[in-house]
Each structure stands twice: as C-alpha cells, then as structure tokens.
Image (cartoon, rainbow, N blue to C red; front, top):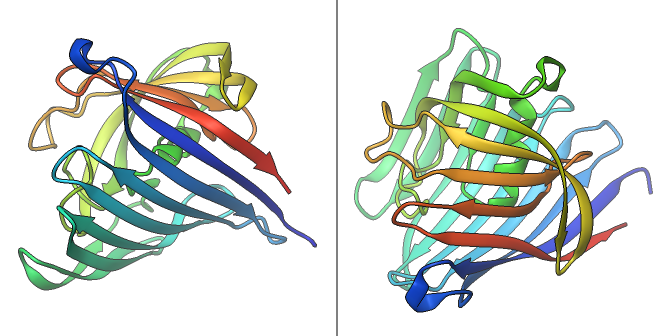
Length: 237
C-alpha cells in the first residue's frame, strides 16, 4: 500500500473522589503515515460533561512533525459552535474560521520561525506534540516559544481560532505502561509553564506516549480537572 495506519480509542474517566473511574468521554483516532512520510491524524472526540463537546479534527504534519494544515469542527452543548481551517508555512500562520461568538474570522500571523506544534485538543495529539522535545538532551525541561492552539480553553470548547503561545515540556524518562489496549514502552512527559499566556493556567498534565509515533497511551490532568485518559483499543495496518 505504501503507507501505514494506526487506529485506536482513548477512554476519558474521572479521578474525582465522587466520580472515581466513571466514564466521561471518549476519542476515536487514526494516524496515517504516507509514502512521502507526511502524516495525517484524524480524531473524533466526545466529552459528556456539560456543556457536552464534540470535536472533529483532521491535522496533517510534515515528515519532521511540523503542522501543515488542520480542519476543526466543534459542537458545544449539542449546538454548532464553530468550524475552521488552518494553514502553516515557514513564515506565516493563517486561518479562516466561523464561530458563534465572533462570526467570520480571518487571521494571518507573520512568523520568525515555523510553528512547531498545533494543539487542536485531541488527547492523541497531546502525545504527538511531545515530538518537539529534543530527547538527545536527556531528562529535564525545554521551553518552546513557537506553538499554537485552536482554542485557549482547557477543553478546547471555544472558537476555533488561531492562538499563539509558548509552553514547556519536561521529560521524566522511559516507563513501561499497561492499559486495556496492551503493554507499551513509553516516554513520560509533563506539560508545564502555561500560566503566562493562557487565560487560566492549565493544571498539571502528564502524558505517557509510545516511543515510535508518540501515540498517547495514558495521560492525567490534576488540579480542578482530575481526569485520566487511557488507550483501550490499538491496531496497526
């Protein structure tokens, strides 16, 4: 076929004492590595907690995992919230979107350096975003100034629109993780240093991802969120 496709499902559960281990959402995803080594991620995300969120993402990446383009469609509270298309070059980031709050939006941002990662809010993407970390430097923290989001909301429940920011990644080393989908050799990361630019600092967020394609195997958010995410289905074709 000349390409490889990974498919999976991630379960969202609560870590709050009164809701411990209760299902609160789910995500179905695929990642296709094409013959030219470009990658296309599809993700369908469902958050049951009100206001309920349904998000559909198609994100394409260069062979070295820089974002090329993305389409996002968002439903919040069972009503259409917005839809948008994003495109990235070496010196520009642009989007064309429509959302219920702001109407039609056209954005173009001039860049000194290419956007390193677009956070479009699927949990599978939170692992893939850790590819930005230079593992040759070993455990520790690295700060990234050239990142972007489709929404600054922690649940990705606003917009979509282009939001440029910086944040840190801390690498805690390797760990073997067993989840319902199987046992995986993983890299362990934590997202850090979001306070300066997000409207509200994101709670502590740890991610365990596969060593090859950085697929999220497990993740946990602390603070007020108290959520866990686990890979429950996984296949390669």
